[in-house]
Image 1 (cartoon, rainbow, N blue to C red):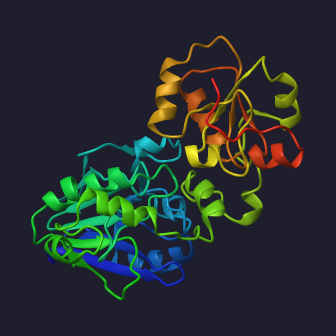
Image 2: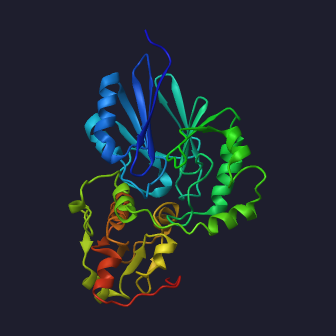
Length: 353
């Protein structure tokens, strides 16, 4: 009988993304990390060729540059989907927390919270390997200028969490832009130009503040889709407000009831203040831990309306609120895009109540 670990690192060229398939040779139980929707047939073909039974499909974070295949793999292979619970998503089967362990065959995967690129980034440690997502790249790191990113948190995540792993630990990132497939904790400590041990935090913060990167091409498609595990698929399903069966309310009705309903914006603080602005009197409660805290402290004495950019994330927020026993809750169909199209007033400072 074969023994040992099955390991495959797979590459998607358009977004320079890596997907990882790990399995046990004896039991054939496997996991998949960071699958890309466009490559789902490739991944399933390999799984079938190897005779693997996929137990978990895990994303390191809500990706902004591509759509995850996690939901599609669950549908076609029966795997369980996992991601950090901080995002407050309703679609995953496993809401991961820091230091949580998952087993596949004799192997154990440990989830380590490494926020910074996004608030909910996780790294996964298996044996002497760490799958770092966008927290730590080969001679680099992920950007921190959207999706609740924080350069300070990323510096801590790398220096205090990842760099405390054994030096020989192999680093497998979610992307590569330098023609490298892997690195090690030791090599990144020595040679990472942003995060090597000679770089002080203030220098790192300055580097990150001056990257001046354009947004990923697919960000407005990928982030809403990935809030629903990559499903439903296709641009026709990405239209404003599409999540089947969610109580919705029109933009016009929200506008007419301002002052008599509570409007909660679930976007990031950057989106709250960007060119779309936010609805006057609305309260910011970003999806994730902040949103969960809002629900825990909410007193059910008024109607709640959730708002986001296009109506997708707010639909998930509505579903989540209902699952927590909150009634009189609605999703504003079309989001801030529809609000702006109708010419309604917006604010762009961090106001609200």
